[in-house]
Length: 331
Image (cartoon, rainbow, N blue to C red; front, side, top):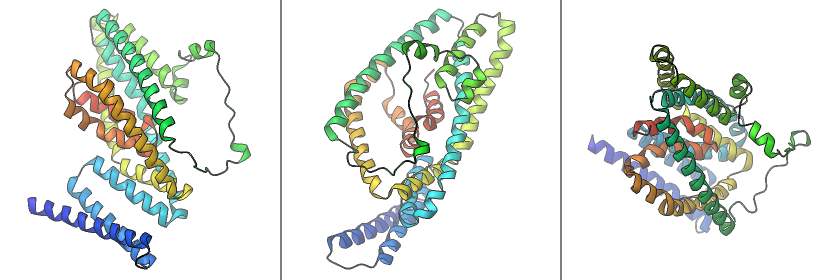
């Protein structure tokens, strides 16, 4: 088994080295390499990545491999890649179907499952206060980072047809407050109003906690069963994640060209620099104070982070992030 693993890694390194060497010789102008050879070297390197993914059998590894495959398809076959967007949209749609029932069930269980509502209230106030303070610090760090790096400057987006232009209507403070609370929970779910779903779920959980044990227990059991079912549902949908992510990257490269990836990597480098500052200055001290297992936390967030990056959607990563946090003991 160890010998097979070693051979897989060596094959991966060899194929990547061949592709890198061919690209370097091509761009340096030292050797005239036919495009067919460059194409073959790139797909050989991808074959090495696929072999590595098969060996690892990790969803995170397959997502990263699919990102490379998607970029290559978008570069070599842009007409085909643009049509692959359908699969990425299907993946995002399936993810969005998870959010509302998962949030409802987990919040209801979290609130109604505690007999002491005062303790739940104190925990909620602390969580809200922490969120506001940390988010404000993160905003300032992000603004400073993007203004220093100027990542994304010079990107030429495709022209948008006149009929697709969207005019944003500013909301008044009164409208912002009103939109926090749902007028129809079914409408809130259909419109993807996550905050309204959260407010409804919290109030439902409080109301359920106020019922006698005999009446509270059946509904709480339903919520617990729904929560476990949605986590299993998430596992099923995540099996499609490599396909959805790969198709999203293929569409992006095929639609906007391979050059967009360089701007994205520039933006990613800015993001990582800002995250390093945020982690060292804010998260690490908080994690040490709260005694969070650092290694387990990093392993838990690796997969949701890769999904959020590839799909450019935090909603896509939310179900998996919630499942990962619950797995490491987050209530």
